[in-house]
Length: 360
Image 1 (cartoon, rainbow, N blue to C red):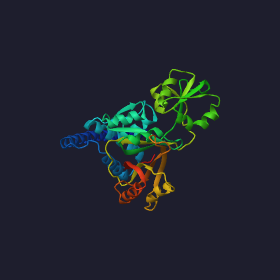
Image 2: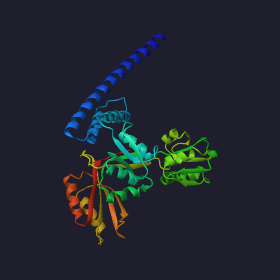
Image 3: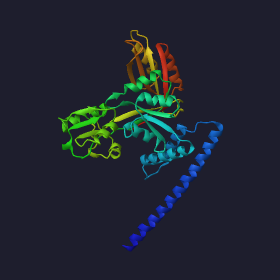
Image 4: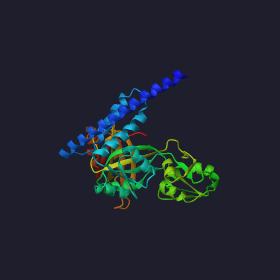
């Protein structure tokens, strides 16, 4: 027993030395980052270069021999990079608030906890914050794997000059929260319409006679329930901790693979990564066979389309705008040629941005 205790103590002593060394290296890294920031400032270069972040992640994940898991490694370096960027210059990121929404969680996942994350009341407010230069980036939801597109986001791109610089594919899990934690106390359920729709079957099976109430966000639902012992909210686990709620049931979404796609918007375009996606919007002339003709430039060049969506053109009745996502970068020769062909049958064509492809 004594030898076992000594062995454990020896191992713990070695771990402490490693932790001390990691701390020294983190501070050394921070000093180098500050020097990089000083040089950037002198040359008037952008302090945040997303392409550099991707290179760091890819190099470390490729070199990791384990047993430390890649997911944890990426999470740790997300916070290291976030903290070091904050030393260079505070990075302000606007998102569709309030706090504890899934937009908030996705923004934290992308930018880390050291960035200045600023909630906005609406999707147009996120765009406005970035357009006016008050925030470097904005994060807005664009579609859910169960409930489809977020139309407000697509509509904003028609007039906005902002570019898509990244996408975040975020797995969304809904919890049922209340003050008491007892399902028998629940007389009403609050949430945003989309989470309610994503949990409809569970609600019908488990709370068939309990009415649901639509509110502006999952966080607003949690806030309401924090003062009402007879109601529940469909929201995130983070909302439970922020509003002092208990989890009645966890992961009540009907579809296990419930993923929401968010877009990161900025005033500047993203660098080419080699594994990119491009988003465009366009309006076509109303002619026979036009829908087939607008897809032909991509088909004959083997460009894979990942999404096509139509929205009414608000300035003209019975005309539509098409949103198209495809794999490739706007600088790729095949993409350049396809967009040139497409332009011939369009009333207008707008490139929303090329950005690195993401996965949940």
